[in-house]
Length: 177
Image (tube, rainbow, N blue to C red; front, top):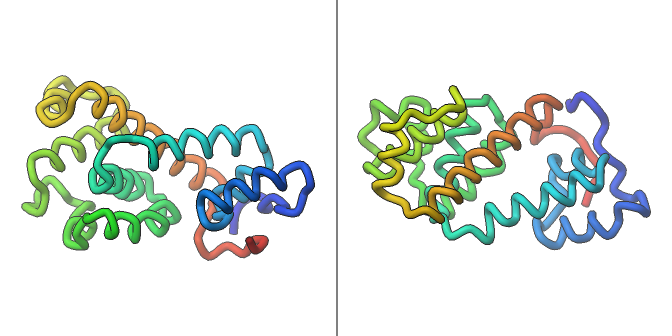
């Protein structure tokens, strides 16, 4: 169970934002129900993550591959639960999802995927990215895509840190919507 109660979705001051989240996401997920304790934070989060997931030109399979790797690295089960079906829909093979725990020794990943996984690992584990890791990413991506990849990795590290600090889990009971 989460460390604090989920926000009340029926509060009049949050109704417009609750309706917007439900319209854009299909429902108010645990993450957003927690964020709704602070409507300005929830609104900013929604805008940022919508830009990352729906307005970026980064390929969906690459986006979801790094999200799943970050979830693995950070022990963020909620993030993994939410994104595994999306990753599969975006074309990430189950074999690759299964190999993420030890991707360097797996032959399931092509050079572009290996470059983004190494980049996600560096950004998540040590923050600073070694020159050779960045150079490998640049072999596959132009400036815009490097920015979008970097922002995606940063965003989902933010997501997993928020989820894990507040112990948000998929099985938590919360208000329906």
